[in-house]
Length: 250
Length: 216
Image (cartoon, helix red, strand yellow):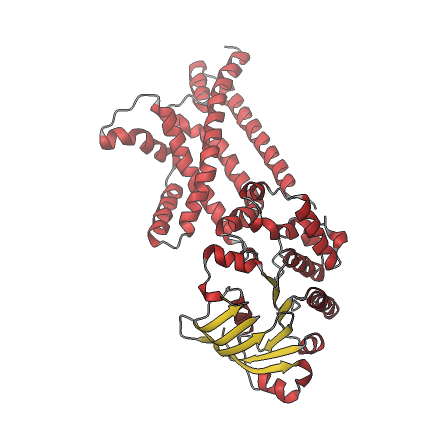
C-alpha cells in the first residue's frame, strides 16, 4: 500500500509543487493521474520511488518511510518499483534482450556484471518478460529498429524482469499513436490483472484514463481536486481539473 | 649509403616512435577520463583546476611543453637528471597534453547522453558506478570513437615533435640522415612510413567502429 499523509513538496526557489496530498493506494489498483502540464502529476509519481524528495508530511510504501531511505537501502527499495517513461529510455544501440537483462545487473555479483555474464536463469526470465508483452520474436533485434510501441513494450519487459510490486508510468503513451497507445494500455491492464501489480499512470488522454483505469486522481496546481472511480468522472469533474487553467510552471 | 641502409636506420627510429605512441595512448586515455570527471565536478576547486589545466595544454605548443618538462627540473629547481630522463620527459609531455584533449572528447560524449539514461538506471536500482560503467560509458565510447580516431592520427604525426628534445625517433633519424647525406630520400622514406602507420591506425579504428556498431 502506498500512503501519502499531508505530503508537500516545496522547491528550493519556494515554488510549491505538491500541497497537502493525502492518498491511499491499495496493492493491485490501477490508477490514472490526470491534470494539466505542470500541475504536479510527474512530481507526484516520482516521489513514490524517491526520484523526487518530499519536503513535508509522510510517504510510506508498504510501511517503509520513503524519506528515511538512502544509499543501498534506497536502491534495494527501488528494485520493487518499476518505472516507465515517455521516452522509453532504452539503450538503443543494443539488442532487445540485452536491454531487458540490464534489469538484473544490480543483483549480480560484480565480476559477472563487469563482463555482462548473464546466467541461464536470468536469460530465461528476460525472455519470459518479453513473452508477457508479446514481443518475444524481437528479442535479438536492435532496440532502435523497433517502432515506438514496441520500444515501450521493451521498457515494460525490462520493468517486469525486476519483478516489481508497483509500476509507475510517466506519460507512457504520449509519444505513441492512438492504436499503439491502446495496445500498450492493454498490456498495462493485463499486467495489473494477472500479476496483481499496482499501476500508477500519468496520462494526458482522458479518454484512455477513463477507459482503462478503475480509479482517477485529478491534480490541479499541486493539489488533489478529484479522487474517485473512473465512472464518476463527468464534465463538472473535468472542468474542475482542467478548466480556466493555463500551463503552470513546474 | 644505400636505400636499404636508410630504411633500416629509419625502422629503428620507427620503433621509438611507436613506443612513444603506444605509451602515450595507454596512459592518456584513462587519465583523460579522470580529467573529464574533474572538469564535470561540482566541486569548484577541482573544476577550476582542470579547466585551467586543459586550457594551458590546448593553448600552448606541445613542443614548448616538452621543453618545459625536459628542462624545467634543472632550470627551475636545479635538479640534475640523467640523460635518460629525455625519454621519460617525452612520455610525460605527450601524456599530459593528450589527456587534456581526450578529456574534452569524453566530456562531450558524456554530456550528450540523455538524462533519461541516468533515470532509467536509477529506477532499476543501479549504483552510480554501475550506471556509469554499465550504461553510460559503453554508449559514450561508441559516440566518441570518430573524434578519438582523429586525435590518434594526430598523435602519430606529433611523435615527430620529440625531435625537439633530441629523442632518437624516426623524424630525428631522418633529419640527421638527410643532412649528412645531403639527400631528400630519408625524409621521403620517413614520410611514407608515417603514412603507412596512419593508414594502419585508420584501418584498425574503422574495424573497431564497425565492431561496436553491432546487431545492425
